[in-house]
Amino acid sequence: MANPDLEIDGGEGFPPAVEALRDRVRAADCFLFASPEHNYSVTASLKNALDWASRGKRNCWADRAAAIVCAGGDFGGARASLHLRQIGVFLDLHFINKPELHIRAFADPPKFDGEGNLIDVETRERLKKVLLSLQAFALRLQHNNKDD
Ligand SMILES: Cc1cc2nc3c(=O)[nH]c(=O)nc-3n(C[C@H](O)[C@H](O)[C@H](O)COP(=O)(O)O)c2cc1C
Image (cartoon, rainbow, N blue to C red):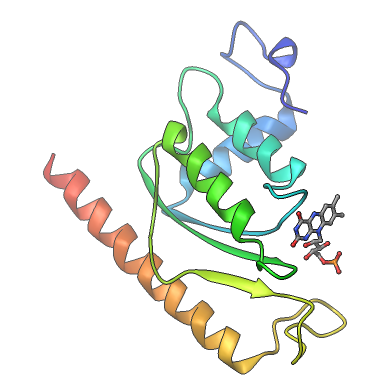
């Protein structure tokens, strides 16, 4: 669990697994958060990753494009998605607004096969639109940042 007591030299360094996570976050052009909803919010493991990579002298998430896809019960994880957007305000993550993808994972027709692969054709199309929107926004943001 994210714990400042485990930071080295006041945030100059981190445990090896955290350094590896932070390196990957720093190297990414953009982020696709794909998550279930746990008790109306993001999962503890996702929050932990968000917290660790936000620590130290540099918040590793800052100024990058992001998109969210969620799966859950009747609301398709929408409440977790809104909490993630709220967290992203402080982290300086820039989420695409549309399209949204909240998958009602337990409603017919089945959306996933037994191994968790997304098999529903309509949902796959929507996912494609999310990815294209994320790509376009990430490129726009990178272009604008170069001009700064
Ligand atoms: C601790 C816990 C809390 C959960 N809370 C929610 C919730 O608030 N809303 C929701 O739609 N689903 C909730 N779920 C169900 C998850 O959405 C579901 O576990 C997830 O979609 C993954 O499906 P699976 O458990 O069949 O792998 C919860 C599951 C767990 C384990």
